[in-house]
Length: 191
Image 1 (cartoon, rainbow, N blue to C red):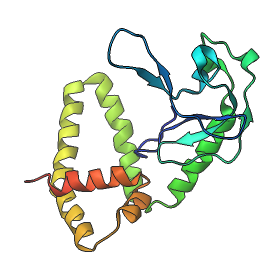
Image 2: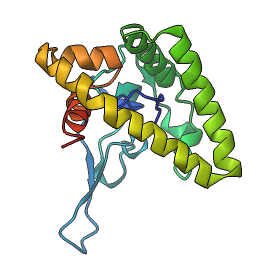
Image 3: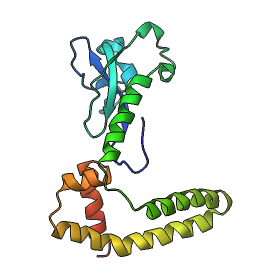
Image 4: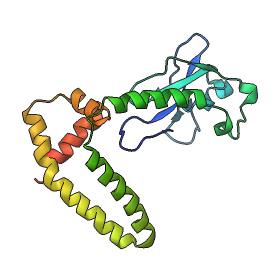
């Protein structure tokens, strides 16, 4: 799975297509020992074993619903079934990276000084965490205090101005579900 910091809901992965161009549903594995039947959509399970469909091509896929337009052939003779992660999936990953660049381009820009401060804080927190986890926890507590004092105000203002979940999601670079969840969390944080 591919992720970008702060892009909640935009987890990328390799998706597959069957020979007819359709996207298969999950593969189910019945172990026969319980009521739970394991399922998977990991690209490498679509190899025809245990009656799974055989994928012909792969493409980039994102948790937000995006699917890459380009697809790449899968040579099952080259896939090591014990280590499928060694198979070259760079095409789908690069397509997902382009998708994420498009998502980032639509985000509300942060002031340059704030971006610099956040980068410094992230770097410094990583250093503190290695040397003094208790101090790092204190820093995180301070950040949470700032979020809990400002978050409810901005969440209620966004609600008052009737900003759509779609606009919030696009502005933050996250999915609509994650945007609604974030707004609710902040809106009711101090209650």
